[in-house]
Length: 74
Image 1 (cartoon, rainbow, N blue to C red):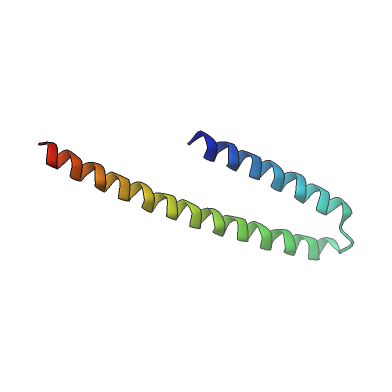
Image 2 (cartoon, rainbow, N blue to C red):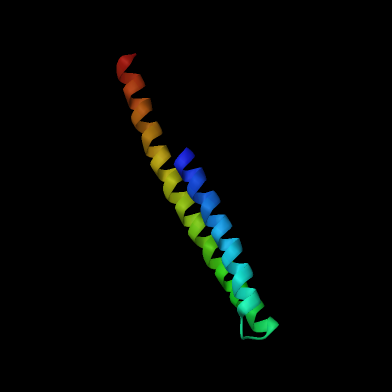
C-alpha cells in the first residue's frame, strides 16, 4: 500500500510539473492548450478509474479466498 501511495504521489507531482512546463513553453494558443490539457486530464482520470477497478477486483478475489479459508476452519 505504501508503494502504491508513493507511486501515485510521484505521478501526481510529475503531472503537475509537466503541465506547468508545457503551459509555459507551448507554442499554441490558450484555447488549444486548454483543450489538450483537458483531454490529458480525462485520459489520466480514465486510467485511474481502470486501475482502481482492477485493484478492487483483486482485493475482492483475495477476500473470497479468505472467506473460504475461514469456513474451512469452522
